[in-house]
Length: 378
Image (cartoon, rainbow, N blue to C red; front, top):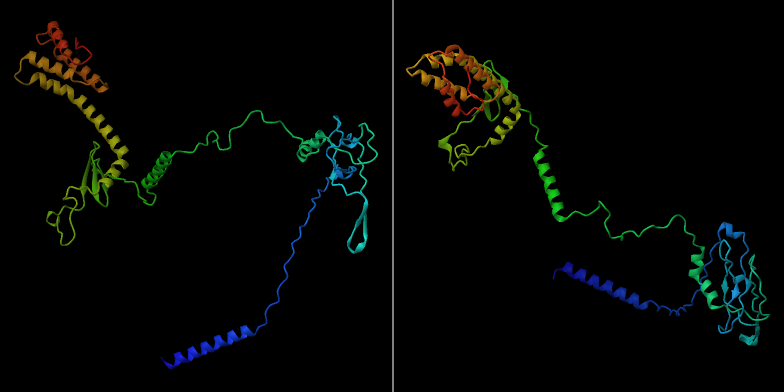
């Protein structure tokens, strides 16, 4: 063992021995006498209210020692029916009768019984009581003087009482029913989905294609180039071309998703289509109206070519003109096309001529028509 460890051990032993000697040298503590517990009595005194402080307090009436004796009730205990409130009566335990009792040291102690009187009640008849001895309360008087009866006599309810019995406290009020677990989960899922789809953290601008001189619209995005034609069609062209040689280059960890037939910019293109839906619809409507106008303008020349050119017979050419009339739509453009065809028939195939439609031919053509309107050019 090292010298420093031995010195520390000797010092510790010396200190412990010194503390033990001091503890033995201290004198013993004096024994404490046991404390005698005595009962303590408390008297609760109720301070009268301000309006009752001015009224004279009733004299307490002692209770009889023998409950078998009966005595007429004093006038102070009789309740009158036409009073604002019942008379307050205090009960006090009776003192022992006067006499001489031996006390400590050979002396005598004299105690006199207190004299109790009852305050007369206004309007009540006073009956003479016995000359000696405390009065005895009957069962009815004891019931009237019970603490619960006295407390209920002073209680005056204010306001109308309940008209009907209400629901139990545990019952749910109308409109406060607790939702079920399925409803809570559905509401929570809907809230999370709405917050996730809102994407408030993403700030994006609306796609605005630029109009070109030829009537088309061009949009240059970070992922693709889009061209909107005059008829509303859209052509997309990606900026990055597909590199098939680098498709499965596992050594470098790179591959082309487009070569794997995966559309990585599908969301971007759909967003562009949503942003330009109104523009494309307007271009399509304008293009359709222009095409219809051009078709009506070219229809007389087409009918002229159909009637004058070719080696078909007049009956076959008349049947071709009827089919063109029957294929017209039932909208405004179709009605205008039928009017142009019927005018051409009246001008180039007038009634009574060798090339005109005869009644039998018209009946046969109308029997096979698809249009709800009959073919009647004359």
